[in-house]
Length: 171
Image 1: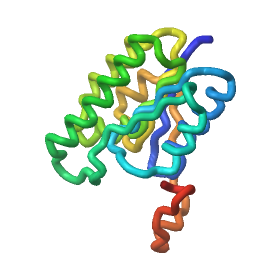
Image 2: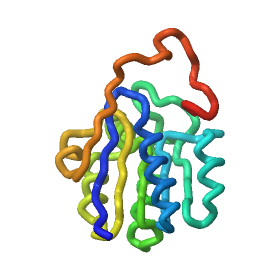
Image 3: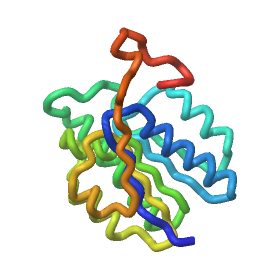
Image 4: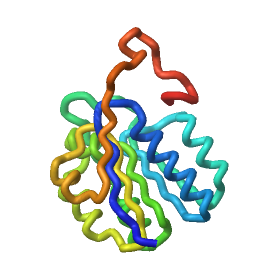
């Protein structure tokens, strides 16, 4: 199977959900999936759901559990860097057919990881690996390097009415 680079970006809901849907589809076809969640740490519903796929889906979190605002802390930078290093190692060892870096675009935009390192990952991607990068604010160079780019656009959202993130739906 030929693998491509997919980017899910934009200010609308559904970027991580789309990537997880792809992971479910891939695992259902017997493909090995690795998901690295940059900037996330904690009890997200997707973690327990992906565990149900056993050896076909591996999910790891590389965040501090704190929201990054303004200048990121050294701890935040280190956690994201570890996540990208793990993605590079998984790809180099050919341990996954589908490799998903959740919130990679945000991590790059916030200065947690250099855009050039993401571009290098794209350039080194083996032909038979599908690489997915999610998160708002995809860098123009990432958009240019990708084979598929989907922008989620927010038309209306119940957050605007004060509805908090709901377990099993947004978290």
